[in-house]
Amino acid sequence: MRTPQTGGAPFRPQRREPPINLPPVVLAALGVLFAIFLIQEFALGYATNLMIWQEFGFLPARYVHPLGEQGLSWLWSPLTYSLLHGGWSHIIFNAIWLAIFGAPVARRIGAVRFLTLWLTSAVASAFFFAATDWGAVSVLIGASGVVSAYMGAACRFVFAGGRFLPQAHLGRRLSISEVFADPTARAFVLVWLVGNLLVAVGVSFVGISAASIAWQAHVGGFLFGFLAFPLFDVKTPRTLVF
Image (cartoon, rainbow, N blue to C red; front, side, top):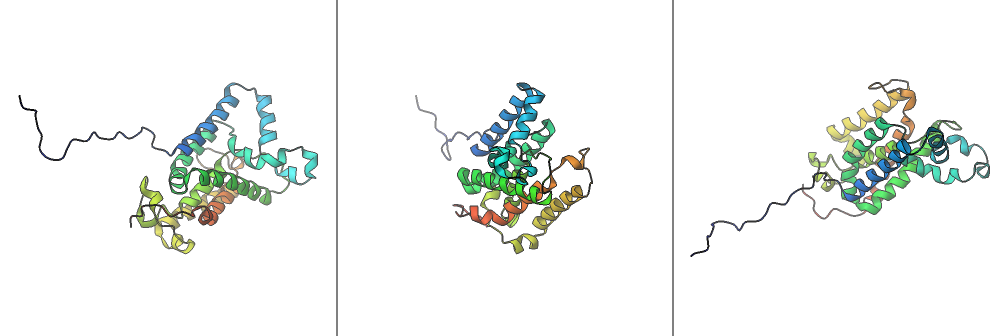
C-alpha cells in the first residue's frame, strides 16, 4: 500500500493569532490599572477611597508649603496618581486609548523604555497641571496624562508612509517639521490639541463636564511624549519597510 502523497509545497499548520494581540507590557499595565480599580470599587468603602485619592493622587497645593509638612505623599504622588481612576467610564476610556497608542510605542521601544516613558511622562503631565493651576486643592488622578504622552510619541512614527497597526512601529521617526508637513499627522495633532483647548475654556464633550477633565495633564503629557520621544527611541527597528 502506497503512502498518499500531495503535490506542491509541504503542509504547514497555520499559526493562530492570539485573541488579544497586545505587547505583554501593555497587557500588564492594563492588568495593574484594572486590578487597582476593582479593589477600590468592590473591596473598599468611600471613606477609604477618599483617603487613597488624597494620599496617592497628585495635589498641587502640596508644593506651595514646605514639603516636610505634607508627609511623604509629595514624593510618590506624581507617579501614583496615574494608577488611580474615579469611575468605570474613566478607566475604560483610558484603557482603550492606552491599547491603541501604547501598543505601537511598546513594540518600537521595548518594555523597559515603555515603562520609563510612563514614569517620566506621569511626572511631566502632573507638574504641567500644577504649573497651570498652582496651589490648587483639586486632586489629579488617572492615566490620561501618560496615555496622552504615548499619543504624542506615536505621532512621531505611526504616520510615516501611511502605515497603520500592527506595522506602525516600523515607521521612520519623523522630525517635528515632517509631522506638520504630513496632512494626516498634522490633522491628528491639531484636532487633539484644539479639543483639549476647548475643554480648557469650558466646552463639554459627550456628556462629560469640562470641569472634570484635567486638560492640563493631557496637554503636558502629549507635549512631553511628542518632544522627548527621540530620547527613548534610541534603537532603530530591525526591519524597516518603506
